[in-house]
Image (cartoon, rainbow, N blue to C red):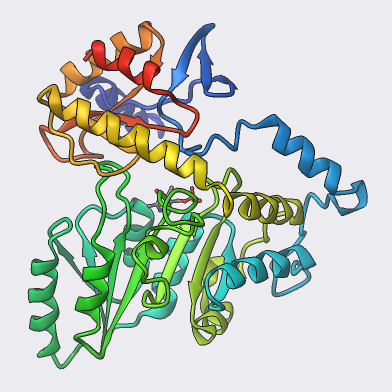
Amino acid sequence: MSLLEKYENELQRLKQQGNFRGFRSNVQQGKYITIQDHQMLNLSSNDYLGLASNVLLREEFFDLVPNEQRVMSSASSRLLTGNFPEYEQLEQTLSHAFHGRAALLFNSGYHMNIGILPAVSDSKTLILADKLIHASMIDGIRLSHAKYVRYRHNDLQHLEALLEKYQRDESIEQIIVVTESIFSMDGDETDLAALVQLKNKFSNVMLYVDEAHAIGVRGKKGLGCAEQYGVMSDIDFLVGTFGKALASVGGYLICHPIIREYLINKMRPLIFSTAQPPISMAWTNFIFQKVLLMQQSRDDLEHLSDYLQTQVKEKGYTCPSTSHIVPVVIGDSNQTICLAQRLQDVGFYVMPVRPPTVPQNSSRLRISLTAQNNQAELSALLDLL
Ligand SMILES: *Cc1c(COP(=O)(O)O)cnc(C)c1O
């Protein structure tokens, strides 16, 4: 028997279940995506403000940065020789925007989530996590020595009951509550103000909130739901990614300076991986400062999102969304795949999302909007649902 056979068999099984994945080459132009010569409106992108596809911004950036500053590799971890000025400049920009709190950068949101949680917890830590958190946080929890309990999605009463229960557990010294602000599959959001109030009832609880889908999109300056709900200084670990609305790559943490220093000493993906190229830091810094001023795009996106959510519900579909991520819950997987294919055939690039990514019988079309979309496009899509 060949050593490859078991892998081959597993791939065969995935294909039979309709869960086989593969890369598809594509070409993107503005809000459109072309796959196998078929151009479609891209409704599956995380480029929520349309900045990743903006050629003018790119030109402006390269005009500003002379060739000798276009450093394409840091050649080491920041702790060795990789700490270029671009890193400190971006951290300063972030710190300034987030009311003077400390900022720390990571190579990706994934690195960030698998690195911070194991570093800041030990066997006397309990992590209470929302049932629907992103895989990167689940992996971080798995790498840690913490005890791990999940609470029902967005159910703060359930969370409160667990917090009270574990106050009486002598083996627990510290509790970290882990959640997202806007959730990637349902497009719904955590009531951050209520969450902060709940945390403040206890002296041993810290909050870890991932703003991956909210940074750039929410708040007057685009600093996320924490800005929108006025709780920026109350979240102990405020994290996000530059890979979505910010049109770049990398993760960031906003925290107390002691936590920042601690992570520099303890966080393995930060210590043992070559830092991102300085040019990426410079680009993120450039984009971030633009995004602070993009109130109009954020308003446009919000109006479009409200319109789509309302219309999808009016058609009788379940749609938990309160954001620019708008699922249309169909239920049956094969039906969802067929519908997605039909929409793609007529020019809307909408992806089906199936179990295990979402719970059984809740297969859905996941529409993610960008500020470049308009109501006429969405109206045409809605006519097909
Ligand atoms: C996309 C995402 C990440 C990962 O961020 P990358 O920078 O893409 O590695 C982490 N958390 C959430 C909630 C995400 O949606």
